[in-house]
Image (cartoon, rainbow, N blue to C red; front, side, top):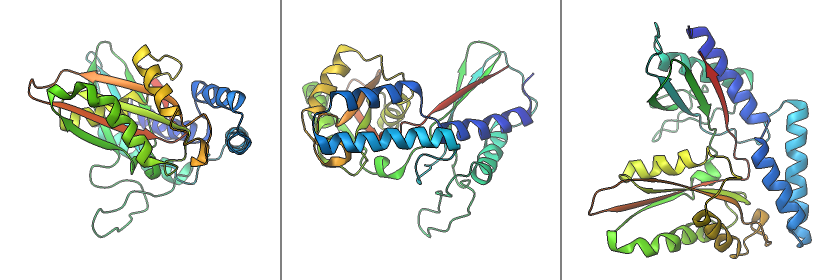
Length: 273
């Protein structure tokens, strides 16, 4: 049986892991980018990034000063019985992670900019609950920095504009330039609704980056041909991966969202039962 304390502890440890250890598929993509790069400035930036990742892992400290806004995906088994409020446990976990990891207190009131210092506030942490088969609970954290989030975008295309999807994605990346700390990871949501497309784009960032479809690889090639490169200073690796999620949409609409992620595609998951 999953307990309140187990969930709190799991959230703390997931944020500790996500902030200090990049997933292996992300590290592999960065190392491959370094090996392929022939621009000396770009190679030096990628080398510094890789050294930073190694140091964060060894010292168990966050790899970036922007530890992100806390985003959590909770997959709840339909046969799982809980005798406590799951949201409350996750919120307490974020509060504790902020103190113990530590996380920079990034969550502020949108108008007054007042900072409670806990990363807990109105609708924060951002939690997505999904009911799935089974009797367990899977928690996934995705700390999301502001530099990459600020250059993300969404557009409501018309059904006749399917051929403009790639152009929109490229425009978003081009306009972002060096702001999101490239090489970036590009999450794309196609379909669903206005808010649903944005959710799909963010959820796409959870996928293994080594498993891209032909459509995604084609987009990746076009993005890298822009020449923005690591740090926005030129080079082959503007993006490490393009990950696309799709959903059925209204016959009269075609929402497309692009959620940009920096090179630190931080994420971690844990299964409780």
